[in-house]
Length: 163
Image (cartoon, rainbow, N blue to C red; front, side, top):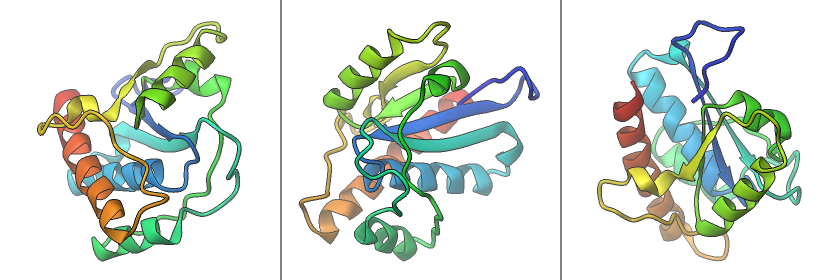
């Protein structure tokens, strides 16, 4: 979530980050957008997702991620991007999927003047206390469904806390 100078102070910005931005973070972004839309809070939130790495910049999410989202009635036109220095200055919250992402983001944020983003694991908000959202890339459809369910629980709890 993000509170920007150019926008109403009620607006919040959130960026969800994973290593490649084609599996976990696009799922989390799409889930959060749907929750925000269902609550009619689109005017209060700007949500995005990004990668720590530059491996997949410009690519669509993994076909299994898209299939999983479609099975839950969610569409996304997301294209992978790498996190930027500006993201650390713009977003209120940068939520990531695992400890490796967290380490990389904290290291990158230390190189940014005026970092305002609170960087933490999305799993911190999981009512079932599953802190890490494992990368399903080398798994199967069931692993993507597990990521979806974790993201849904975490995003709901996050939205409840900050709405």
